[in-house]
Length: 301
Ligand code: TA6
Image (cartoon, rainbow, N blue to C red; front, side, top):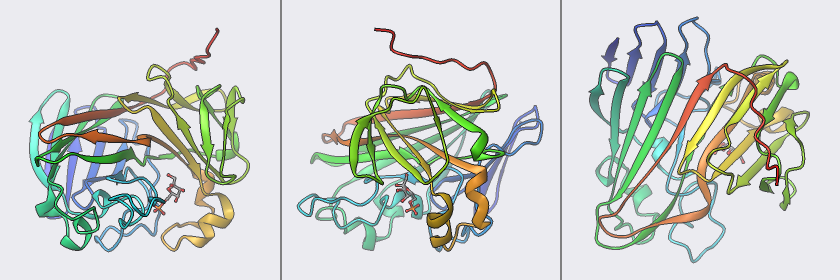
């Protein structure tokens, strides 16, 4: 098990050969290869890794707002899409455990450009984010702790914008969102998901809301489970594939047919804001694991 730090990234190598690469910019996990050498995450070949813009792929971190706030009276209204956590350089705190191999990163106003923090309310919110990344034999856990280091309450949204690699999106099904309420970002409509397993044949952008934490989302391809996504303290989950037109419109999305080989399953707290009083902390996590059996968890009552 080893940890290598360069000026711009941290590389974790597990004793079974699996490897995770984390860019200090955005504390963005850009790669997770399992012991068989298989890349589990999707990264655009045109992703900017020089800090000039948020990384297109891997696991960008979304804080303190998801998307763009539509309420012009809200303190997050002026912030850029998805906030500033994904486009700030985080401080690498080092290794905190050997087994499982664990490292931590931190972000506070000192690491964020004033141009950005000044767009959050009156620019006086004081926060400390501690991001923990844990590499196990066949799973990767990412955990966030948000501390309100000031005296005044603030509210935020959080999301892990996880891009999974898939062989062919047209062969993929996603389980365990059946009966979940969702907001369809494309139709601007709310409805309950009726599909026993979600399939993909066009642009897809839905926020599943208040999904039981025991529901594990599975990416299944041709009857085989590729990925399992377990959420802790993250009631919502966004599912996104840009498809042809949206991919064509993103300069950093390459190859242009890359939508066939990726799917975002994004655990978050985005339907409502988390309110945090002075000195309070909030913690949440996603655990990504590969393989296993298809477990369809329906509400039988
Ligand atoms: O998580 C889905 C989403 O909100 C989509 O609507 C799309 O905007 C995507 O995020 C990517 O956003 P970005 O700012 O990274 O281009």
